[in-house]
Image (tube, rainbow over all chains, first blue to last red; front, side, top):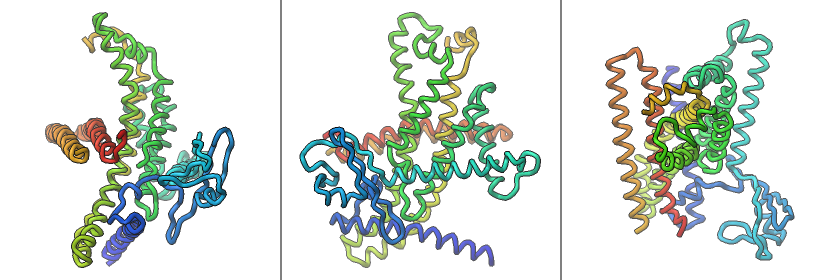
Amino acid sequence: MIQACRRLFVTVFIVLFIVPVLKASEQKAEEEGAPINVVGTVSNHHELEYPGGHLALPRIFLVNGKWYFYGSTESAIESGKFTESEGALAPADGSKITLDMSITSHLIYVWLSVIITLIITFVMVGRYKRGEGRKTEPRGWFQNMFESVFIFIRDDIAKNNIPEDEYRKFVPYLFSVFVVISFMNLFSLVPWGATATADITVTATLAGITFFITQWNGSKDHWNHVFWFPGVPGWIHIVLTPIEIIGLFTKPFALAVRLFANMLSGKIMIICIIGLIFVFAEIFGVVAGWITSVFAIPLTVALFVLKAFVSLLQAYIFTLLSAVFIGMASEEHEHEETIEAHA
Amino acid sequence: MGLLGAGIGAGIAAIGAGIGIGMIGKGATESIARQPEASDDIRGAMILTAALIEGVALFGVIACILIVFGVGQ
């Protein structure tokens, strides 16, 4: 009986998640005139949606060395200094915006994830400092979960991929990046939530941090391999050195694109399948729309479940690859061995 | 025409990634069957390699998205 209730509850919960997606795509469709607007739904917005409305976010501009602050897009237009052209704001006098520091919905979700991670970590640090978990068993489901995630990052990701003597200093970065990305990905499942990681700027920043850490901790061997690959004839260096230098940059690029494309494609898939209802309703009439929804809604439920899994998997992969890259760069190898290995 | 190119490109990227990840899956399941005690290590290596292949496939997808949205026209 309890199990049946629980199953029902989960089903209702998941269906509830779909309602905002339905509503959002319907609204956008009404505004645009097309049956469905995929790009508008996944892109970055200057407003934060919540159940029953949306909150306008501040717009901050730097134009010709002067800062402009507005509470929302509307107040920026009302002030007369900015006009709307092609969906973006531009200064009314025809000059160009030097820097657009407006706070967007994706940024809000990044901040939210970071703050939640900070709170969780500090609460847990307080507990461990008091001795709970060190002298006694970890207490409560929350501390147990925290500890198992932390140990997983430390032992399975950091220790296995980064040299034994220096893996400890990378554990904080790897742990925080894992938790923050997990939160950002999982916020996309929440009704009215935005996927911060479906934005290339967010993932590129994260990959940039990994790139910086990797190069900063690069050992002598790492740079030796980049600029003068050991154990090959001299003229090969002309080919090999540019390839190695490009290779430095493709790694973080792949890291950024992988996370971005996975989260974006998941979102687009769901919107497209939901959108089928409206497309069919417009072409064949309302009845066809209802019939399509019988197939589309369960499929979306399945996709949501898959997305929940992919969210955590992608966070894991990002962390794992960061650890692998850091490990590859900070490794010192015996030189004789290296020559043999590459010969 | 650009949309057609994007569609074909996405298909080809999916074929390549499908073959690659399929071969990883084949190798992993075979080696787990031979050595079940090493399955944890094999699973980790499998996810890592699959992620690398997926990254290459997603480059293709990104190129297709750029074509569809008309970036660079």
